[in-house]
Image (cartoon, rainbow over all chains, first blue to last red; front, side, top):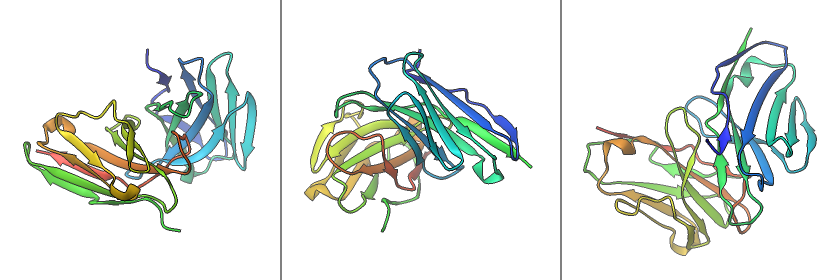
Length: 112
Length: 115
């Protein structure tokens, strides 16, 4: 079992709709959760961090965390063609020495 | 403010040749990371530095890979000799403060092709 699992996609969503990206993790001790966006041929860029159960909103992006279910998701409202990218979930344990484990990413395509 | 700078952006070499990558992190970032990213995969950590000390190199293939961060700023990653399976994008990242952080700033990466 992979430590951080994501559906590879591609996930195709019409412009203006809500895109929902999901991630599960295996380490119950994980404390910090991150979403990175990676455009084709570019490097990953941090877009959201979440540390507590519940929702965290930033503009059109909402991160949702459920530690009991070991599940973290990213919602993108009013999807735009510029949101087409690969979204990578990353998870980190409690201690400062804990590694950041990246998922393989979900490719999102917003169709006009 | 300048971001993480890496060079070269692209490198094509034949197997068994050496190659080196350079990284300049964001000013003031104490922690520097080298990651390798294969196509369709997430980044995988090779080595993490805090200042000039390599604090996590458990996933660095030490028979052929080496890294250094002299003076706790710039870093180089070397592969000698390169193998076909080393073809990947090598990403440098930095973060503020001590300890591993999930809030990483990545450079543009160095894409290596080994023929």
